[in-house]
Length: 637
Image (cartoon, rainbow, N blue to C red; front, side, top):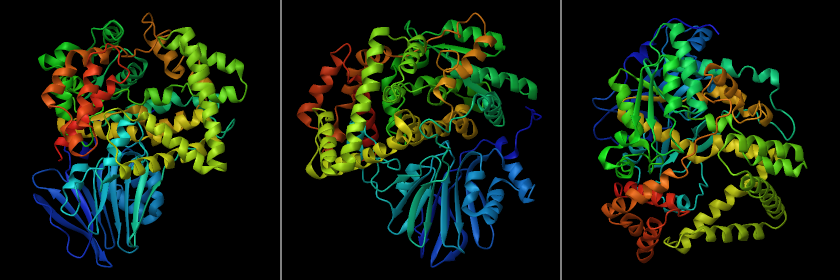
């Protein structure tokens, strides 16, 4: 692969975070306090697009002609190529998108590569087009409030608009505690929605639709997978994904001892030296628990790559305040209740990188989703009576994870295999032949998931159950076409938690003044891995075979050829036991959840106390979710 000379694009040299909200308004637009208003493009049918930029903050890129206007936050990786094709070589990315829209219309979205959120107003067609990049690196939210269509990369900016209510979505909060996320576009605000990754929002003549503009080709059952020759492009596409990250300036990398981050570090180091730019600075947390301690490997990888390396003990990163207290505080300022309770520890690493000149940080996020093989493959193998394939899957998994052989054999055969197959076959039959029975079964299952402390009134229950039935109906229908395994693979594109994670990382980067970049979430790379069959993903008889052999050769003697994945199964229960009761005491209980009528006052403290007193309570993580949600809600009630 040709490596370009070291040079940052002009728009990447100054590191700023635009703060803006766009409003498609009928008549006179509501003013937004503390923002400067700019009218974009002509009016159509009394509708006009207005851009409100926060005073004193950077502004997004804007381009306009007589009939069209574009607002862009983010960057195109292929902007120069598109500009050359369009004959506008001196254009910035917003101007390029505007010219591309004039030539290709909505089809331009499939030509874009980058991390971005964009808004296009076409007054001639009375069309507002809003899109988020394929993998959701940039968020995009919207609301139809008081007749206005409000759009921003900031969820809080949307709900702070004068025409939008800040009412809480009680059904979404209840679903969250049941581990159901029935609506991909839903947020915890009643009047605010997200544009999902790889989707666009189109509003024309008052009609609104959200659609997926990017959908990688899905293999059908038994066909459509990439071949062994095609999968050889993996290394080329991974290198391209990492090279795109180099344009953001001096990099750090979160370096664990696992295959994902080590593979990214090796590629980034090689490309940096070929381009004549500084190699990434390695940033590593050292966990003290034996099951999670990877210090030997982390240190050896950093030394062999010749990287500047910050190895920080976990206790130093969290300090005397611990991990849960700061995480609960951070949740109050996040767009959603915080998912990653370790975020404050990793932010300590990020600050070290920033102090040493890093402008962006690479992560291995996405490696588990796209390099691994879901155990739900067992259901398809049992369904096709592929005993050899089932044995191979068990053997590959038990060699790649720290699991008991007999216990995992049972889980694979029953939990992921036969039970899943029987359940889905039964539900698929009932959904087709007896929808009322199907609905009743789903409602009964949902009731069994309710926690003792949850309060659900009749109206709320009706809303939650109907939405769960709808999403389960869509899932069951999808199984008939692509099978259980591929339905699980697709969840890495369409599960709300994936979008939520990307939004959390984006907002955290904005607070810190850093970008977090995820090469394994590169669109071109994902398009290949999406269709790579399990046998090639597990090439060599172990998980993540596409990178394992390369990494093992690059770092001989470190055990990557036989490495088993580190899992923090015992770490979180120890954190809950050590810190949970004190954090809960400082919160003073579930006051916000009770005020919303979602928790029983007599039950919630008793249930939480039971969890704290147990060494291995199966619902321990639910307490963290409750504390995080409670903190988030209190900042908004």
